[in-house]
Length: 51
Image 1 (cartoon, rainbow, N blue to C red):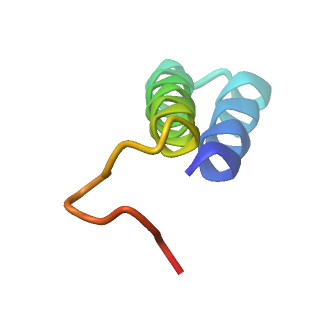
Image 2: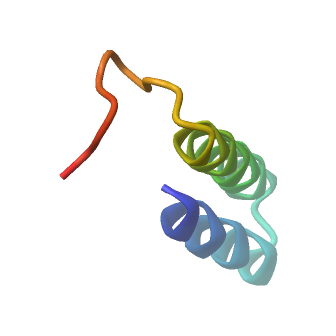
């Protein structure tokens, strides 16, 4: 999700589309939060591990 967020963010910045920039930022932040929760050992979405 972080990668998708960064790609959408970059495309939004290059094409100067504010909606894509906003969506990319939100996706990247959500991805980082989920990554941090996974590192802390918290269950994300009811699962401890994602394979």
